[in-house]
Image 1 (cartoon, rainbow, N blue to C red):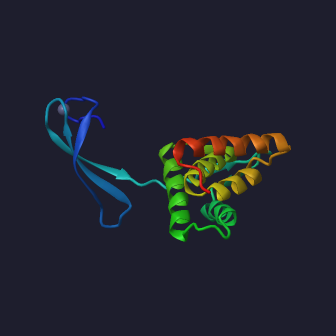
Image 2: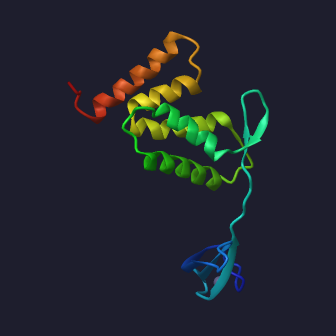
Image 3: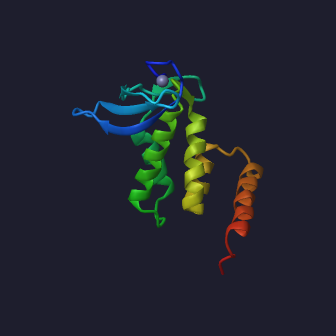
Length: 159
Ligand SMILES: [Zn+2]
């Protein structure tokens, strides 16, 4: 945020609070060069994220759809609903931080896999198998091996 007094591009935030309506964030900033303070209002923009599917069609990002995919993958697994919701929120936040207008559906899938992988191996493989649409046994085996390889590094094998 550029300083309105001297034009210096860097400032630090000294205070940050949402406005009454919660639609914007009011920030007190201090210029790192001249030290003067100024206020900025950052509007929380609701830019719909457009997801580009493999066939090139576009649709807006659907939180529920992502959530349902994860729930399906976690069926009968000891994954609490809280964790699933957290994944979806993390992904949503991560995507909006990228400030992109369009995003390939595959990237969202990769994000989900990355999260699931840390959470539950079975859910991860299930999701990956649907998402990547493993066309042959070889790529599936490759994925499993990758997972097992990680396991060896990360923890002792379970009996
Ligand atoms: Zn300044």
